[in-house]
Length: 302
Image 1 (spheres, rainbow, N blue to C red):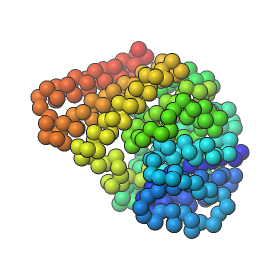
Image 2: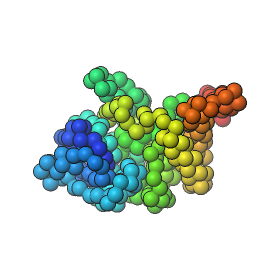
Image 3: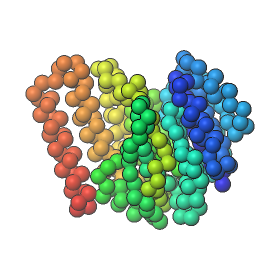
Image 4: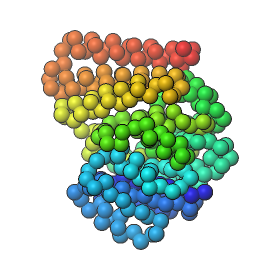
């Protein structure tokens, strides 16, 4: 089975070589690695071009358009039966694709998710998301699992998706949208509109590098306002697509992003030194409402 590994690259010259090495060192050798040049300002692409492996394909976004556009752009060039995404500062375990392939072949799943672990700047690692191994032969069972699960895993990384399903998913979306927050959630939501079966793996096959300089760690008022716009845009997309997806999936994604919007509004006000009593009360009410609704669906399935 041929597998496409998609790596968007933007200003990660210190890490991209390690990420690319982890993709090329897979024990499952039938891979193509599609590197997307997102037109950064450092030497990241020089590092990529130093690799002579014929399995590496380089395409360009033309200008800096972000990882959302880059992943869709790469998907349109992919030829593998399945696709997985790797951020250019993260790492795939050497047997990740092999385990993904064997699981997909054994179960017939359209979508396979693995557990994740974090790699900190001091070299230590810890579990980020620990899944229990499970096979969901129909998507209704998977939707029920997500509905009854407290923790969320909206990252598109650590996922193995049938390319046909992924292509149908992105056909629903406007790839020109510039998103720097919640783009993974939107991609997952769109995939869930078409996936017919799924599987979870307990193995942590994907390593997320935790960097304080990451764009999501920057908490200026301007950046937080951009995050807020992204969340609100994605929430609107969930509403637009809600009839195409299982209602339980919609509830999980919608309620999570609604709460993220409430947090972001609080953080914007705090960054501007404008967080008053009314803002604090509004956030507290949103938090209580979110936690209560989550408890009801997790414990009682309602």
